Amino acid sequence: MKMTRVRSWQRGALAGVTALLVIGLAWAGAGSSASAARPLRVVATTTQVTDFARIVAGNAAQVVGILPANVDPHDYEAVPGDLQKLSSADLLVENGAGMEDAWMVNLLQSVHRRVRVVDTSRGISLLPGSRESPRGDPHIWFAVPNAAQMVANIRDAMAQADPANAAYYRANAARYVPQLDALDKYIFAQIATLPRAERKLVTSHDAFSYYVTRYGLTLVGAVIPSTNTEAEVSAQHLAQLVGVIRSEHVKAIFLETSVNPKVEEQIGQETGVRVVTNLYGDTLGPAGSDGDTYLRMMRHNTDLIVSSLR
Image 1 (cartoon, rainbow, N blue to C red):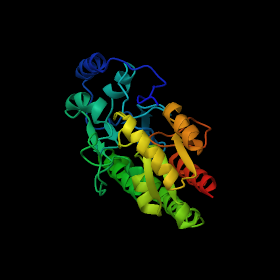
Image 2 (image 1 turned 180 degrees about the vertical axis):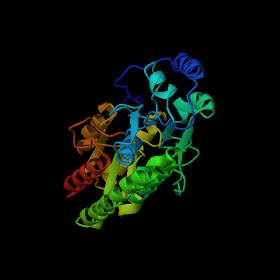
Image 3 (image 1 turned 45 degrees about the vertical axis):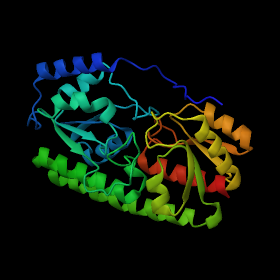
């Protein structure tokens, strides 16, 4: 069985692109607050925080995201097109908890002097991470109350950066909170329909700890035994995982949309367990998909998990 995952897209040269971005930021001379002549300009890193930022911003601020849909945020590398997005930003909204460290750390050393960085993980109790994620598990959005805290952090930052529209940002966030509450209740109700003995997950990597902790499932194992998809996978680990899948009578292996399916398919063939595709993990889906917003992604994942484990 192969031990290395094949990526579905080409990697760039991070150092060279980062240098371009830093030089561009120095030329741009972007300010730290929105000008009265233009709307607040917000750049968000991951697809989840981009979705939250757009909800809070409404029509009062311009929000652009860095990561496209179905791109793994753990190993993303900046591209020249990111320069234009960052050079005139008033706020940079990040997931935090180390999610972006591998590809933003050098850039942020320059950005911090010109643009306020909003860490949406602030105020959230982090679960333990892994060797590759020493600050803690960065997949905080998988517990809905954490998503509400992320929205609150974005709301407060926008209100501070753009006081003229502060009440508008607060109202947008307030309208979203009941939708999050309803989502939280929905997930609890759906998971409760499964017998406890059937609430067992095997996933591509350890991205779902907040989800299983919040909603009462068990994470039996992961193909990549780390909160970071860049971690190496040994043949010994995969052999152990095959044994656990068999002994625990796991019904399905859940494959995330942003990873290559080859290893999961090999494990599925060896164990006779079905591989369930189209689970949204580290990224939202493209427009029109079942995971194109946070609310749709979480409902879709829950429905897929419940129907696959029955």
